[in-house]
Image (cartoon, rainbow over all chains, first blue to last red; front, side, top):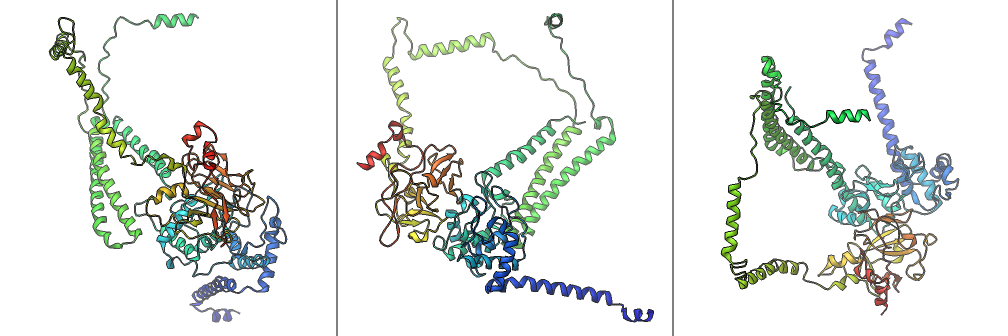
Length: 261
Length: 356
């Protein structure tokens, strides 16, 4: 027994074992993360069936078993399309944690492959906007200047002139767009989630949507002037100046006037 | 009661206050202890040293970080380092100098005598005499015989003074616009049959483009290519076009044919002080004005449901033309924007005039 153990135990065995484990983990991760890309392109009956199971387990309490919705509780999902599912579930807004003024973005509850199955099921109920392709949301192919014009006309009143977000009524708000993925921005425009109006392809064209994404990409860069203070304009800046700036001036003045001990 | 009496007797004002003299001189730590003085000296030197470091940092950031790149991130870094350096160099000098003065410089109380503000009687009498002499000399007042002299001079001086401000005011007021046609406020670019176009590119809108839940920001067709007064016209004519489920829409009496299958168009100019009302909450059909939170219910004639606005947003009557484009039936029936002075005179003159 002892001889066997010594024979088996090579000096470099632990290192080898660790490397093997690492390789296995990365391999599995690569497979699971690359899976949705293929799943999104080809929807099959199995996805729809899996999606229906997921829907029944996670969504049907409010939206109903056949996604018909309930008055004043949850909207019907017939015809909302895969884009709406990918946005709502992909940003963690759905499943909703609690009822309130609006569903908040939170940690995503599903794997991307499960989201795709849910989307496949919901889009099988009625035709609706589908998830945009990588090319449609590629900001580097858009024109930020044209995007700025569109953004200022259609989006800036709620999301702020550079996409920093803003308040609506009764606890509702337009979220900041700096952390939102281009795909989710595109889907939000297409589907008009919650308080947001719909901006269909006839209102803002495909190219226009990509220009808006390009404009928002530029806004993610840091501000050359230093702190952005949320980029929500004179209110935040005034708050900072009055509280921090004048506070420091008063503190210095008190120190200047105080007698040395 | 007895307490009060006692207080009163104790509080009687004395004949005169005694000069309390100078306050007690409290020596500072640095005056008593040579070690503390040495420490204060070091602190001042450190503060000046911080200033030197700040200066070097600012110069280093300007020359050393400049080559990092032209992207915004490195510009931000350079600017931040220069700014921090300048702050340190200025504050170091300032705080060092004050700390020096407070801890190490002479610390003795000084007395500055206060002098009465009133001039001497002699000086006052002399000044009054000079004024009197001046009046006498100019002849403004009555002469020795009681009759005012120099009436012509007095009158012409008053006239000159009175009209002199006009030389400034007339050109200024004249430059305020040069256009005094106030009735322009009453009308916008919308006319019978004007097609609705997208802001900013001016492309036309078909009814089929406007799906339920959509919000279109609209200008009149032709505005995008207007050469004169484009912004002036735009500021009056902008419209928000919304389609909602027709079941949600409460049609206003007398406006039965102003909307089309759930599509309604309302002026985007707030009736409070004229900000663009465009925060459209799709689920509640509420339009929110970003300036003062006036809220209008689009489903119910854009009536005010919250905030300082006093009247609903004017509705643009729309129809569909033969090619399926959305057109305006006519101009707004009331002036857009904040309360219009004509409104104060009588309730309904504007709509009568439009009808006429």
